[in-house]
Image 1: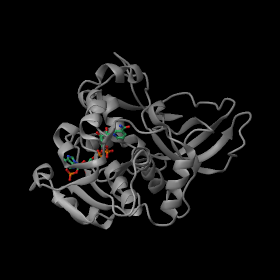
Image 2 (image 1 turned 180 degrees about the vertical axis):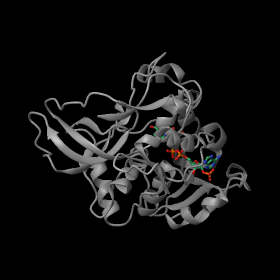
Image 3 (image 1 turned 90 degrees about the vertical axis):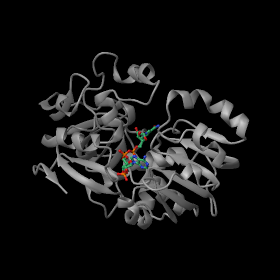
Length: 330
Ligand SMILES: NC(=O)c1ccc[n+]([C@@H]2O[C@H](COP(=O)([O-])OP(=O)(O)OC[C@H]3O[C@@H](n4cnc5c(N)ncnc54)[C@H](OP(=O)(O)O)[C@@H]3O)[C@@H](O)[C@H]2O)c1
């Protein structure tokens, strides 16, 4: 099969498209023919080994110390089940699915195997494979953080980095739960983020949300510049800070910050589960959760896709399509 591979860490040019063996499903696994995946912030970090401060050694255990352990990146897929291993009951060939592969990666290829009990579920009706793929990485991450705290009608939530894959999903999920959402984004993304359900916008080029004297029940940092030491004073007693992009220092300080401020500090997502992915599918089918596709690239243009993601300005997701041959479709 064809796959985007990298044999060393570095810039987008380390990526090439090569023929590698097609995996075969073992007992309990399904083989998916991939239609689309995304080039996510995690792919960019893993390719470049550019991780938040202090996390180089722990992340090397997963990514590899000197060479990539996961030569094929891609944490999410949409596609069609083409074969199943022994004892698979949940899926059959022909089923159209989405899946979160997580740190096992492998989605930037024509085929991938996944445990049938893992985060894989029927794809949303009414969405293209490209849109369905764009739902996964941001949606699953947003859900896996939000699910650990109490968000309900009237919760005052602030989302820092509201236009990215994760932030755009957090805005929508928090809005759907009835929260009053304040989104920190650039002016260029104001209209998009408002349309996703944000009640208020703070343009970070103009205002510093940490000095505005406002209070929130939940702050979600999807940028990495809002650790508790900077935003703790904004959180109401009993509130929470969700560090989607936290560094090691913030993680070490978390338990101390919780005691000191009487808040919850979440530093890692909960487990990726099929039922949660199924919940996201229901929300997408109901029109409550909308995938945002910034650009779509072909597999052959994978380095260009990474180059664009490296810019740090993408809105929602950058999709990698295994079925198109046009290098880039906007
Ligand atoms: N802990 C986990 O398990 C986990 C899981 C997924 C992701 N992450 C991390 O979470 C972070 C977000 O992921 P993502 O996929 O959402 O990233 P992304 O899609 O690449 O985010 C890009 C967006 O960030 C916005 N942005 C950049 N600087 C900003 C700032 N100072 N203030 C507000 N917005 C800013 C940009 O908007 P403008 O163009 O308007 O600036 C752009 O739309 C990444 O660091 C990623 O590695 C962690």
